[in-house]
Image 1: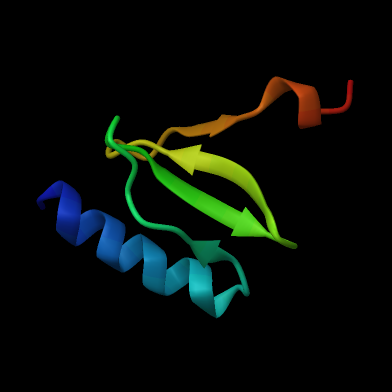
Image 2: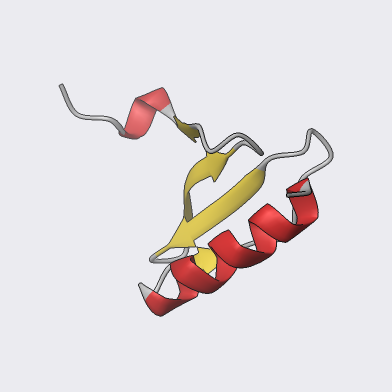
Length: 57
C-alpha cells in the first residue's frame, strides 16, 4: 500500500471518529486535529507522534 493510500484510508477512519485529518506536511507526516488544535501527527508506518507539552504524566 502506498503512503497516499494509507493516509486516505486513515483519514476516512479518523473522520468517522470526529477527528480532522489535515493535509500532509512537508516532512511526510499527517497531522490530526481535535477541538481546533493539532492533537498528533501520524507517520506512514502508523506511528503516532504527540507534542510532549500536551502529555500529562
